[in-house]
Length: 237
Image (cartoon, rainbow, N blue to C red):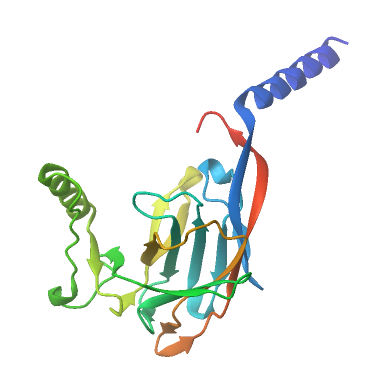
């Protein structure tokens, strides 16, 4: 009887802990749809809405894409597409062009958004210094700009022209019991605009074709639909 009571107490404590460490959170987001893709969340502990699509290609290349827009006229932008492309060691990556096409599926309006630069690591970039892009932030003070620049230099991140060739790199870190966990790196780029006057309910993103070791892959349409979401977020994030 004492053992049963102890088990019951433990179960109650676990239940209370679970309730106290999580909370329902309502959100609006744009859910990506792509045949063969996998939906994931970029939130703390993989919590939050599944707003990112993961697309796996040949040679171990993986693409993560998320996109959204707001009806508000933001001071900076009200629409964005964020793309991250990773690959194993020495797999060559290159974009076929330097723009992203956005199509509003309910009005047939479309926009061509330019990719200003790619962000990568010095280890992933084998090109010349002539292709490195220096980014300025005119709305920020020179002191803050210098701080951002120094921080990026310390982390070895650089910005390069959009059609630069990047190579994948595989890294690892130690985990419990003497094991290792491996992850790949590559490049990422963002495009944003203030041109969208209202919030999309249904739109499509067309990324540039990806050249992988000399072979061009056309990703086609990645669709996004506006949904309302109530999920459980951990409070300790």
